Structure formats: structure tokens, C-alpha cells
Image (cartoon, rainbow over all chains, first blue to last red; front, side, top):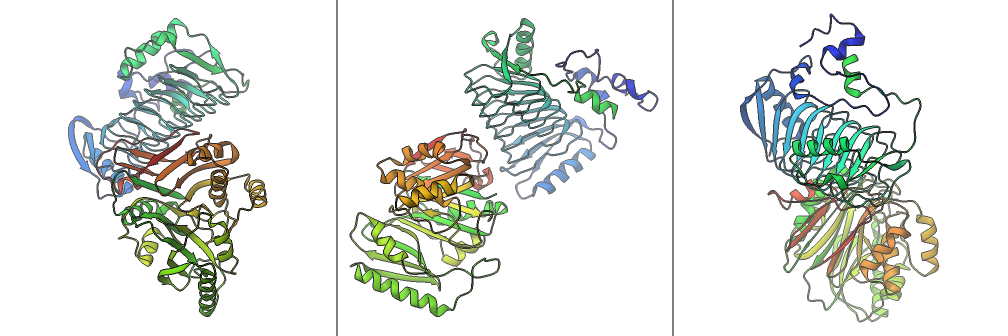
Amino acid sequence: MANIKTVDKKSKAQSMGMHTEVLTGRTQQKFFNPDEAENFYYFGTYDVDFNKRTDLDVMNMSAPEANKEIDNLMSQGYGTIVIKNPQGKHSLGVGILNKLNLIFEGSLGYFGMGSCDGPIVRINGRVGWSCAENLMAGKVVIEKNAGSCFGAAIRGGDLICKGSVGARTGIDMKGGTIIIGGDAGAFTGFMMQRGRIIILGDVGINLGDSMYDGTIFVGGEIGSYGSDAVDAELTSSDQDWLRRKLKVAEIGEDFDVSKMKKIVAGKKLWNYDNLEPTEKKGAI
Amino acid sequence: MCGIAGLIHRGKSSNVGSELQGMLQALKHRGEDSTGYALYGDTDGKNFIMRFKVGENVGEGSSSIMEDISVYDERKKIVDQTLAEMGAKIVKEERTLAYSLRYEIDFETKDLLDFSQRIESIPGVEILSMGKSLEVIKDLGNAKMVCDRYSLDKLVGTHAIGHARMATESGVDIKSAHPFWGYPFSDVSVVHNGQLTNYWNNRRVLENKGMRFMSECDSELIAVYIAQKMREGASLEEGMKDSLSGLDGVFTYFVATKDSLGMAKDTMAAKPLVLYESDDLVAMGSEEIAIRSVLPHEIDTYDPFDGEVKVWQI
């Protein structure tokens, strides 16, 4: 890892491997590169071994107890943790700022995996409202359906729901990618500020309402467009990116992306800062 | 923030009192000012069951004024006289609490409007429910407290809806608690999570059409609104679909009748609802943990979309 104490503030992001290109325009995006994973490091986090695996039954635990135990297991070097019997509990798996393979054998309630940075998570069930809110980096895969406010305000990472999601998916999102295998509800991409949303199915009314920036791709029918959301041309590089992303996400690999609609913001906010969130994080 | 829950067994009966208690208790963090149950029990269908109150719970946290218990007795006496005058015979009488009563009544009528108006013209008396299967039980406290107080855990039936209330729009009292009876329709009840912003406009229109409001709780409007639509000839589902444009605000609500259960979600989808549906059971609640209390094994659930209305039959 780069010694960030020896570099000046301006080039910290580059030194940490978070930034490899000169940003121009308003819609530039930096994606997480797995080859540079070792550069993402938080002081006070744990050195875990992905091959060291354990189960954790949270049936009779409260959410704080379960989260504390996950932290305890990471401190012992466990890099793969399987959570048994989550039983729709709220706020499970929140605040993990660590590399970790986390698997939930069941469904989560509200705010699952909130404020995380780095873990690779698979949820073999559904999730309630506000799953992975404020996700900074990592990957969260939901095998079934998700509630409303899916991926609210995420800054980075990949958030994938193989089923359908409720309303306001990607509300206020500032980076990262959200991929939906099924349908999405009303106000998808509401006040979206950056990042990309891919919906393979239909989407409800007011798509991209009041979006500042970012891109939404829709494979099915659109209920209606929100204020400031307009169609844009689907380029060949968009299609390449979509194919790549769907393949990595293990979802809709055979989907005909050439027929997808691309929706962007129709207005410019001239005083809008175009720094990428990951770059900002590195500069702090 | 309030919590709502409901379930319907298709083709069989179950211990719906206990099941709904578990669901509502799982939602108690969403509000425990009051809790209410609308239970559809197995009955022979011959007599009406009237749940009514002659006073309020004036316990801790209540916003009601304390009255002498003799006032309750006096009101009950007038109710008994009025029933006799209308030719309604009390077959069975239960007085669970000083202010809360349950009557089984032998009475022939197709229009409960006149009946209800006469009973509720007695000051301090409110019919909580009237029907041949429906019983609305609501009181202050969380689900377990109300269930224990009224011994609801043994009630067997086909379906039920309930509500855990955090009082925001009106007082902490039984009259503002959910479920609301769909006055004057037999066996219709409503629970609601949300806030209605055109309450007063709609209330004025409906009152001019002869409908009654017992509280100032905006949720009561849904029950009256649906009841009025049904009075005009609409089916339950038609009335619910109409409410999506007629009611303004954010809401998820359930309506139950003698043989059906329905849900509606506003066009903003601002209020939560998680739904489980199978061939023999539908269970739904504000949060998945409510459903988990009756189905602890792994199940497939989903959030209904904005503007969605669904109705299931027993």
C-alpha cells in the first residue's frame, strides 16, 4: 500500500490506485479495479483470510449483537462468514469497512448492509427497505426481491438484485452501479447524482425524477419519465459496458442490450462538482 | 409511523387471534400507543356480533377524560333499552372491561345505517364493529397487552387485520385507534399506515351524504370512503382502486370483508408493505419480521408496487 503520509494531498488518490485517468466532463466514472484491492485499506480494520470460514447463527441474537459478533470474527481473521437464520432482522451487516466474504442464508429486514465499504456479500433471500444504503465499495448480491430505497445514496460498488425492487431505487445515488434483474417501482433514480442503474424489466412512473447526473438503462417498459429525465443515444461502448457488467453480475448474460433505453439528465447544474466520490475519499 | 399486518387462510381456519398477535407484537417498535385487531371468526352466521364501547380507557398515556364507572352502566342500560325498542334480542352478553362490551344479537336487517345511528345517538357510545363474523377489538397498549386483556389468543377464524399505532394525527384513545369499522356495512374493516392530506375535503362531502365519523383520525376516512363507494354499488376492489385517486397523501391500507382481504398502496409507494402469497395463505405486514412470526422458515416475499391493489378470497 502506498504510504499516504509521504505524498501531497493532490496526488493521494493516484498513489492509492483510486485514480488512473484525467477526469473531464460531467459524467466520468471511476470503477473499482479488483487488481488494486490491496490499495483500499482502512486503519483499524482487520487482515482476514478468505479461506478461513465460519458459520454464525443469529437466530437468537439482536442486530447489534450479531454485528458485534461479525466484527469479532473478522478480528480473529475469518474472511468468509456464513450467517444462518437472519429471519428478516433489521440492520444486519452494517458498517463493515473490511474485505470480507459474507453470505446470508435467508432474508434481511430494513437497512441491511448499510454504510459498508469493501465486503463481497451474497444474500440468499430478500431484503427490506434501504438495503446497502451509502455503500462505498464492494459487491452486494440479492438472490430474491428487494424493498424500496434499494441502494439509496450509494457512492460506489456493485449492488445487484436478481428479482424485483420497490420504489425509489438508487435515490440520491452518487456513484456505483445498481443492477435489477426484474422490475423496479416508481421514482427509480430519484435525485440521482452519479452512477448507473440497469433495469432489465419494467420500471414504474417518474423514472429519474430530478436527476442531476448519472445514467439509467431500462430493458422493459417505462411507466413515465420524471422531471429532467430524457432519452439519450445508446452507444456501442454503452452496449459493451452493459454486456460486461451483466456478465460479471451473473445476471441476464443473454439479454439483448442493444434494445435497452438509455436515460440521462436533461439539465445541467453548472456549479455541480464532478469529482468522483472515490477520489474524494482518497483526498480526505 | 404505524405498523399494519394482515393474513388470510384460504380454504381453512386457523388460530388467527394468536397469529395476528405475534405479527403485531413484532411491529411494536412502530408504535404502541394503541393496538387493534379485526378478527373474522368462525360463527354460525345467524346472529350479529356487536362490539361497542361505552367509555374510554383512561389509563396511563390516554388523552381521554376520566368518567365515573356509573356513567358506563347508565349508557349500557340505554343501549339495552334501544335494542329492545328496535326488536333486537340480546342472545349473549360479555363485558370484558367496564367500558368494552360484546353482544350477540338476534336481529333481522339489511341496512345497518338506521340501527347504528340509533345506538350511536346515545352519548358516549360507539360501535366498534358490527357483523356476523367480524369483531374489532382495540385498546391502548401493545399487541400482547391488548390480546391478554381481551383473551384473543384462542380466537379461531379465517382472516384478520391489525394495527400498531403511533398517534400522530389525533389523540391516544380507543376512538382514534384502528381498525375502523366500514360503517354501516356489516363485516367491513380497515387499517391504514400513512397520512391523508385531503381528509377534511372528503369528510365534508361524505358527511353530506349521511356517513358518520367518530374520530378526527384521517385513517377513518378510508373506511368511510370505501363504504360509501360500496353503498353506491362498487365492489370492494373497485372502491379500493377508486381510492388511489380520490385519496391524497401517502398510504398503505388493508380492507377486510366477511370473505376477502385487500391491500392498496398509493401511487408514491411511500409506505412500506411486504407480502407473502401462497395457495393456502397470504400474510402481509409493514415489515418482514411480522410475517416471520407466523412463517419462520425461508419464504419468498415481495413489495407490492406503487398504485397496486390486490384482493384475496378465503
